[in-house]
Length: 196
Image 1 (spheres, rainbow, N blue to C red):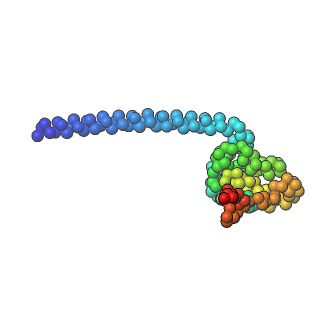
Image 2 (cartoon, rainbow, N blue to C red):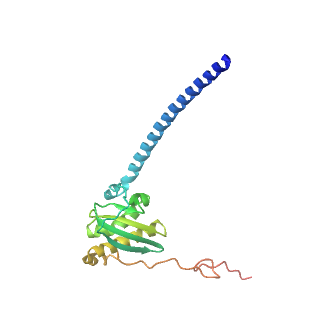
Image 3 (cartoon, helix red, strand yellow):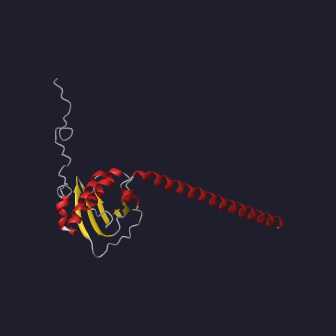
């Protein structure tokens, strides 16, 4: 009987040692994970160097609530639709509850097209913008968002039409993908012709 008890005590001691070793390993793993996160953050900051300065500020989180006073505009391009809400703020843009530069993968070309109406009107830091995008690809969504922002600015101040209209920022781009025709490979491309 005594031998069995001694064996059990030894087993318990071994289990305790193993669990303490595992805890230490977990702590070291957490340290490695924290270092990785820091490295990723520094890499992201390096990637952002090519972006405009005003995009760097858009790190604030979207609360999910709109203020009482806001102006709305709907933009479209190809099959993309953007519902845009602008309200007084400091220049933050949120797309589907994510920061603008994160949603558009830090692509400077797309981000500059989005900000074009605000730059032309010189109100880049006057408004916060919340947009819901659906359909299309990133490029079409960026154009739809630009169209929506321009329309929302006009609902805020109709006199801005004089500035935005000559730049074609209010025009809905009518270009769409042409439908496929039967008997053809695509809209116009035909199958290879064989004479015999």
